[in-house]
Image (cartoon, rainbow, N blue to C red; front, side, top):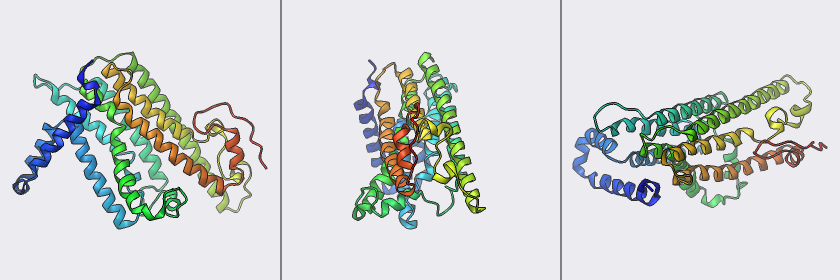
Length: 329
């Protein structure tokens, strides 16, 4: 088994790189910032460089969040940073050619294309909902600030620092660990697992796109009917969508999002030849985060709409499944 399969080897390499960078931060370094940054980017392991970028972005996010009192700064970067890290690994891959020729690893190109489509689609969906407006903030953060999430209000500044700003930023890097694994094993021929990963990623992208579009159409129509003073019936009257893909899952878009990154993990498996690989740590944490955020979303929705509990009782939470018949009251 290759030493690259062991997470301890990777952590030792990253720690050594960070120590090297620390030793370069002398007063004289300020006079050669450009060359120093260039050396750091090209000489360090690709994951070490990505981690330094991640920590810098996290620090910036926390600063902006503190100054603006807006907890959605990281949300605005959610669909952008993983794309950047993926292309970073792809860019660094051609530097590994010993003959000095520009050689691009086909697996990394394939992953980069899939992640770019993922990011472009999610960015568009976030934009059309007004997420990039200067003061836009996810409605759930107000619930968190009021203590409705289980997080004590007294520790919110600490929560904002460690969880919102730093943990979420690190998570956005961790979910791209399979891309790093592919970088470590650049040159490994494409195989059937790559084909399976590509098909699954494409399918889950299509599912998430369809689910988001159905929800967008529903919300636009619901608000338009309400603004026009029309009588709201069916799903519009209940306040939430239960048809289309949402007849089989209460959150088909959440399911597809997690499944997409689980499928990206398969590229790391294909490259490394190991069925159980440490690069899956990121997607496991993503699933854990979605479990928490989905529970918070459902709690808010159930308090807002009286018939939502009947929908919960009849329809799968995440994995699309044959639905029961809701007993509306």
